[in-house]
Image (cartoon, rainbow, N blue to C red):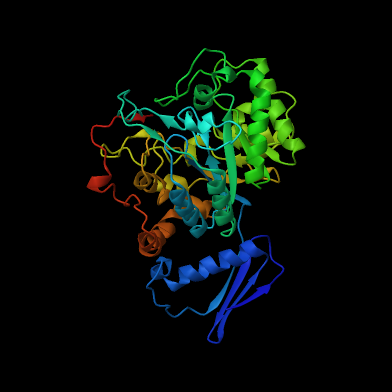
Length: 428
């Protein structure tokens, strides 16, 4: 294959296939990667196996393409249920195969701290582990210790691996709420004498003390040494009982990231904080929050719970395992159309929150094939027709997922071994 530079939009490529060979023209390194991904698709499902496939003939023609959005993201929550380094690398491969280019890695929460900070070792030695986890949403505990964390070298490896596949890793440390794991490690960061790493799901009322600002400046400084991402996420969501001092705390940390040459990202609750620097706002509560953020001069990533939360149940059928949230069918995800447009819209992001995904097989089941539908929404402009999409997915793309070893949800409902009978959910 002959690879040539070309004047194309960012991440764009042109594949010219003729009897004499293949020419790949690309705008940049990402465009070359995506052109190679399209060539892989044209070779058939066997090309997605690690070894043992025989190259087949290719159809002659020209494919010219570039993405709709510059931010085509997926959040992976590794705080609620830890995913090993190998599992994160595999997830990066799955994002890259779908031409998604941002992994928002949710590294800390009430239920676990997954990011090693050498200056503060208790964040992982204490905050990285919990004695039990709630089974479903019924309050019953499983009694099984759970935990894990990434060393700095682990994270550097994930970052480099992702970069080689045109994926940027955007790390998230969620403050000043969702911080019980940090508080368990260092109770002086809070206002109570002691804390435990939380074993339940939901919204904790424990908040960091605003006096912990210097501590978290050091934590974020260490994060910046590992993650070259221009955008660094600091959370800011779900803080019942927050005071004006807490809002100042978030603003000062955002200003600290700006002073270090990065752009802070926060969930849409931070829009209530006066004097924020220019940020990226993750509009999760609804799209109106994104419209409000753009009007206030912030860039926006749309990730509305009503459309793009992949922890929500995939049907209303009684055998849907651990039914949480609203029904988001494959067709619902494919039909999503952002309500915001214009230069402030960076793109869109699907969310994989893992309270009820205790192993990688559950992540596969909840994410796919809905993430495949989302990838087309994020990449392709123009009208979409589910009746046209469905046979392409069924006949061509699901065999690729099979070759990749993805245990996705079948189109007609879960396999018997994918159900979780008797485990209560929290449907809405």
